[in-house]
Length: 184
Length: 184
Image 1 (tube, chains in turn orange, cyan):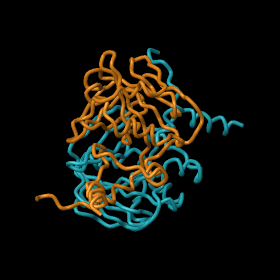
Image 2 (cartoon, each protein chain N blue to C red; image 1 turned 90 degrees about the horizontal axis):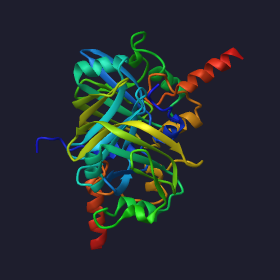
Image 3 (cartoon, helix red, strand yellow; image 1 turned 180 degrees about the vertical axis):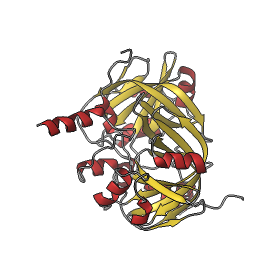
């Protein structure tokens, strides 16, 4: 192995929010939980989101070059996060289980458990290995309700949430630990 | 104006941490406060950071293709944030005012007020308008101390911090408001 082993615990201290990223493939809709999203420019107003290449939503964004992002409220229940974060749109129609509306691009924004939402047209995409970084020009934003944004730290500490294997922040040891727990 | 006016308050609900991003130009060192940093891939372990093109640290990263990132502790005092966030390395030698050490690349990591640090070699860079998004392969990480990471929300709510104009998240209204306050 040419690469020196990194202590990935250092990366756990990076701060993230928790969002539902959605897209469409013609009339089909899908979405997933995403923690890696940042505003990257003021002018034009641009956002970058990071999506695992194996995800159905990745396929939809590649096809439509459009995505929306709904910013989750801290009070979001685990069942809702589980629907978007641990189930696949290849198996179920996720959007049929939640309140949503279509915005200008045809992407859905999730109107329950969300404080605000935005939609964007992809201006650039970067292959970063396991994931694609989509950079989008924000074309509309919407405030949905007052509240405190759900953070990745809150999700782990208070909701005892796990990191799905497809997240950029997933650490293999978590998997190993879970396997060990199962064995006991 | 072809672009519909966006309500940028929606974007204020995105979650960020607060970091010192550093780089070097041969033997010269500099750093700045950055909020826009996310891990973007597991394999290889990659990070993306967003830096304003007018910053001296931007010039250093363009030259060296290397950067480091120190993850700040919630207890970081405003004087420290002010040094890296509101002063220019063109006027003062910022690193001479803090405890730091050089890591493998020659970039400095800040050892005071930091929980952990990493360094990376730029594998890709994307011009996103006002800013450049640097994508880096992480080559070393280090845990410095226990603590709670400083978040952008904490900085605004508890430290009453302002957003510098060069941040991707800067909103013009803040400037207007400050001008109005001055007039009164």
